[in-house]
Image (cartoon, rainbow, N blue to C red; front, side, top):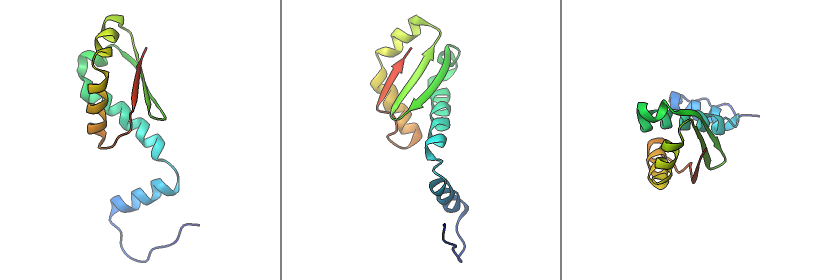
Length: 98
């Protein structure tokens, strides 16, 4: 049972407590990764992105262009660094492009 706190908490702290108590962080991370991909990769790449899914520490990205998939394969480590930096945590260790 969660303990009641009698003092005022900042909303961000209260939300973080709620997220931890209800084990919601993985779901929030999955949504944040999709948003980070969309924002950091730009419109050109997003037009060919059909799915972005985070499982454990592996990001699976489905692309409708084999040419783009090959191009992105060369920059996987840079993409991982950009996404983790955008997420402000080391969430992604590997990217699988399909």
